[in-house]
Amino acid sequence: MLPLGPNTPLYPSARLYIPIKLKFVLCQLGALLWVAFSVYLSRPWLHSFSRYVSFPGALFIITGLAYIPGYLNAFQVVSLLLDRQPPLRDEDPKLPVTILIAAWNEERGIVETLRKIACQDYSGKINVLVVDNNSTDGTTETALRCAEEFGLDVKCLLETRPGKNHALNHGLQHVETELVITLDADTLLHPSAIRHLVSRYVSSPNDVCAVAGAVLVRNSRATTLARMQEWDYFLGIASTKRLQGMYRSTLVAQGAFSLYRTDSVREVGGWPDAIGEDIVLNWRFFYQGWTVYFEPLAVAFTDVPVRFKHFARQRSRWARGMIEGLKEVKPWQNPVAFSKFLTRVDLVIPYIDVTYTFCWIPGLVLCMFGKFYIVGPLTLLVLPITLLSNLVLYMYQRRVFKRLNLRIRRNRVGFVTYVLLYQMMMSPISVWGYIQEFLQLRRVWK
Image (cartoon, rainbow, N blue to C red; front, side):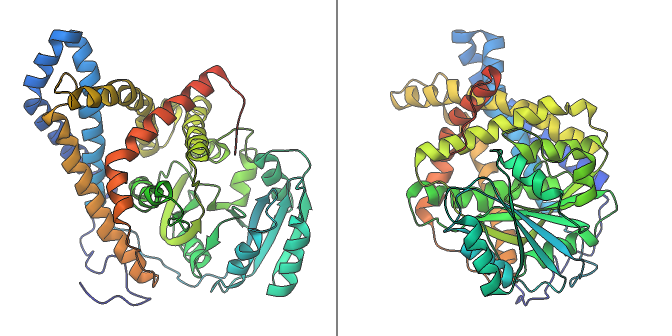
């Protein structure tokens, strides 16, 4: 591998340009060939399983357990192999930006957040708006003290209505810059995060209205659950965003750290009153015909839940937010071709989660007792393509980290548990989120 310096491109040998439409066709072809191979090998499994649940039932279950996941993983692998991040035309932009922080009882966490903003290598002016969402601690006083200590331009606002969307929309009224960056009050920026985020925006086509940053885990040593999430953020979430960004259709510019064109946010009515306000906002962008990029070099670090109860609440919210997005803007109403395809993929995710929860997990228990009705050797066909996907992204992420002078921490226990157990936790939690949205149950954030 070539030595990497701060100015080394992520793709130093990327000389052959493949049009995005041709990439999409090649990725579809690779995914369909994998599915055809899987179907061919799974015929004995399909026929033997049909004796117990009928042929349509067996086909329905196996499709959710193997065929569709295999297709999605193969599509992702080929996409990652063909992806070439467009070069940055301006690596030292100077556009003024406003960082919008919605905070509730963040007296302790906001100190380091503001300190990292003050350490940015960005040449443009940085304004900071802290919107105190009716905190009962000293969030506002702490933010103002840090502003003076760190030499930041910080303005504090008060929003008494509870809800992150209310806080963000209140702050939006006071944004005077072309670009606004949302940042969670407990999220820490890499020194070049804002520069890379803005660089990607100014290097993008005019229809790009938002750029999602890369959020990674900083408290992965807290518990085994946090160690597993470190790999999910580092490989799973990053690979999904990178794939979507390749087609200029990143489905979620997460509120934890993303850049938006201010006028675009205002034009769609700001952040909606939804549990997944960033998801719905994104899909409203797509409905306008705008696109969203992802910048892997714009890195921020956040704390993840360390207790299962809080983890389950967070991930069920994410699942519920996806359903809110599907209800807000139907995939077939999406005017952008690639976004239309990727949002349609979200339509089958609940199907996969349901079959995994109610078929794979019970089938795995039966398998342990020698009953291979559902889970058997052929169900492991998804595993090699999943491992290949993780390997491809790991190699890419290693280049990203070297470019940013970061080091990948050893976390073997987290990786093994992530590969073997993570999906078995995620699918039931996601199903619970779907049920919550269907029944319109009370929203729970923490």
